[in-house]
Length: 126
Image 1 (cartoon, rainbow, N blue to C red):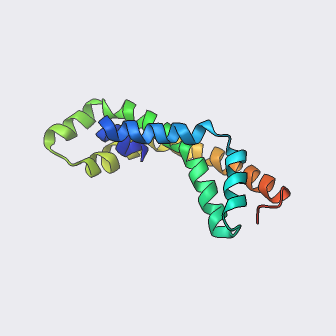
Image 2: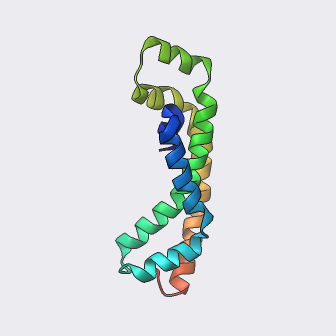
């Protein structure tokens, strides 16, 4: 989503960014506790809640990296060649944005384990 928001821009980028800002304004643990206490507490719900709450940070990182890469000369050359948005995202932006995303993956994994252990301690985890 971050790559597509950076490539398309405009209202699509604005709506997605505001939605992510709204999710990030609520503390993760409190939001997880509220959602898991309202919805049935099973493994699928837990995975969805953890995924949605952690995806906001990855969205912001991927959008920031993609905005920087989107103005590079080789991306502009691909646009001038008439390549589609999918080509630009997967062939031009993604390979160059992989290193910060991989490092963020390791950090997000550690935070997910911490979040899961906190929820389990409070009785809403696995």
